[in-house]
Image (cartoon, rainbow, N blue to C red; front, side, top):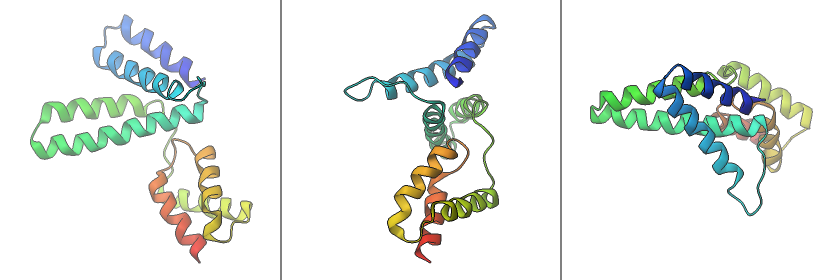
Length: 149
């Protein structure tokens, strides 16, 4: 399980006194815990949901990186780059735009989705199958385009 892998990596980083890796892995664990305890009842996240959490963490860091670079804060930008690198190590490889397009087309055929009314169902299936491997903002635009005809 992905959670165990992260916790083992945290222990290893603590033994190696790798402060940046320790703090980043603790941030991942905190984000997972926050998501699990957000609602009225406690849940245990699946690997796909953990990948989703880490994907959001990477997007946040990319936005921060852009802001820091514009502001000339090279030190903070470097820190964001390091965190992105550490988090990315636990994500499966990202699909290229061509691979994502092919996967989306195949899924639409499989689900027999024909109109924009099927978009929610199609996006849910994409997120379930390709969590952490696809940019869902781009995927949403492509699904909308393909379903609109």
